[in-house]
Image (cartoon, rainbow, N blue to C red; front, top):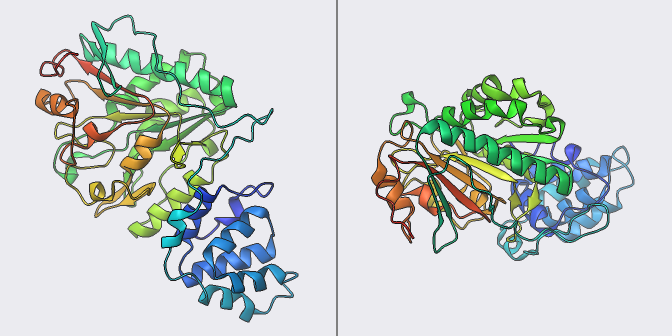
Length: 382
């Protein structure tokens, strides 16, 4: 599901970091996938392919593949020997290089430190404070002001990222629709708010859009955001990265993981933990504390700490909490029309949150909550 095309899409000029090699190798750990990786390397050698094959297959098999002069001259037995020698357990990959990649930007600078907290306050905010754990909370009198703040903050982050590294990566909500049952959090509020970006002065030729999740064999989130703002802003469609189609969860999750991890680091850098880090993630908070496509006490929440990027459930795929927490900045929005239970917001912003409130566990490198007066009523000020 995720192996096809992985090698063909990778930059060939430089090898991946050990962390991203580990992610890709875990996708190619099966024998057929390892054989595909070996075949791809033989047909188009590159440092990236070399590091991937080396991490995916046994050293002896990898050596034989490296020695093969060409695809035409390599016996099929050699390629499938590499596949049959695939590593049975990927446990060793967990120890592979947890350091972040160094930037390949002009001038050779190191990976950026965590971006300083945003100090500019939206003019319409009636309250603005920072919790002891570093999360910033802004309260607005009405949902319209929250929508304006989303545009202001997104434009500011986009311009700063483009000036710093030449591109801006934005991950937008792909939540739950009514027919799925449970709390509804479709992403429509954020999508409609982002229509205001069209006149923000952002260079949209340098913007890349990703999605927090999607139902299997559906384009709900993709269609929603294209119609609401992507097309109007003129973002090139090859820079809009939807969840791949399909109903086989493991394959869809693996393919989207590959699509995220293979981005140039000018688009998606690495977090301090080594996971890919988008510049900004926008999240709507549902009435039950769901965020993205993560439900309270779901199987996906049991994967916290596994360092996976994209997870799959019974009905669709979702970016993981680990991925959310690795992003450079996360903005969670809780207008009253989406978050109908103020108690949920109060629980999420309490000092400690558990898997029964996914929104409260979001701790990105910089995290901001945008609340409406009605949804902030139970939040302790500090």
